Length: 432
Length: 156
Image (cartoon, rainbow over all chains, first blue to last red; front, side, top):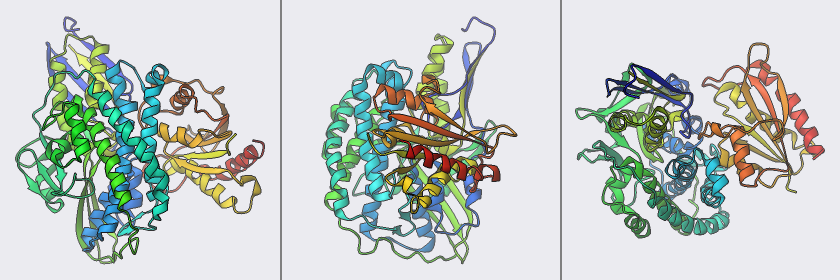
């Protein structure tokens, strides 16, 4: 407590965050002096690993960065390589990619809502404790998630690290009949998704709001998922080709993951709340109504309410998947040829956790000479640290255990996938 | 009782972490000419708990093939554990990708979706950095582990 001269709280693992990292909070004289989200492992091994590989390989290799959002890595990789090679895929391939991506959004959002985040609001230490008390809730979450799993499996060939994605499209286009069982499951999942919105909207949310600039892709015709132009709440707008001019990554002493900021502006956030704030007018009528009923306004700046946004986006993803299945006609060819050429290509898509940027430089034979991957969690690190500084400052009267748990929840608001940014997370509080 | 399932857990782009995936690939190859594997479901998984539950739910026998960090002298050795008797569930381990097999089993028990029999074959690995290919001692364990699985599914 604050009357003590010095104390150190060490938590060996930050539970229910994808992957692992470390967080250090130092309090001096009753004031928060330093908050650092520390990441130990050199994060760019995959970028080095890609050098010398063929231009056709990034979708398969980068999918292994994350078991929760492999489709996001595949989609951004395809977009970047196709950009480098000057290839545009036909609308039918784009639609199938969007359908696959909907499956991943359903999987990832539902996993976070039910197994990682909801226990915080309900006073349970883990999803297991929640399951022991409220088995019905966890079963609903698992059933909803399975709709996403099944959709990814039908298109991707398997639910984990899909194998049917290739540069230019897919190896095989599913027959329409292959979607019949998953469409039936999605129809039921839509009810479960709407129940989920109503459920999480009833949680108690701490009164906390941030002022970060928010960044997401936008598309004039639909809620951006697999493509779009980058926009921010500060009025910026640019294509993926200009991403590196506007987003500056820099090394910080305490982390081997790079921190991102907007050039000349500073920290920003990406992710569901940013997407919702910038694109909510493009939600389907049903998802928009669910958002209104849940009390979401035109923007979401309370990171705790991100669980509501994820639930609304799950409704949208389920409904969008049904729409895409109903309109589905297999493309005449599952993929277009992507002949290599020397050049640089960039691509950005909306991973469940936010905007995911890839850039590849190719030589004339299609071998990768350099690669760059900017995952959403790395982009959000500075904002998470800023949130925690303000959050901890207002709660210094809490005991170590309570404050540590509160910090963990504050981090989980951003659904950080440290596996994508890097790995390893534990939390230390140092007070004197 | 559902068909046996073999679940290879791991990531083939993390060197020895790809052992489970390699064993499943070996079994898929053998299935073409080994009748003992007829009807056996082969799955790969990154250990994410809900997918593990999906994969083994309803199975009479589930064999999980995984790898664990080992010390010098242990690399390439493997152990067989029948669960849940051989492993103490640890609810505190609950965390996303990082949710351990113990916590996954505890969750499965809470939701009544354990297989009738769960066997885990754990091999000790030494290299988990980014990159493809198993270390030589871990690669040498593929055949004996696959042999053991063929025996296990025969008796299921």
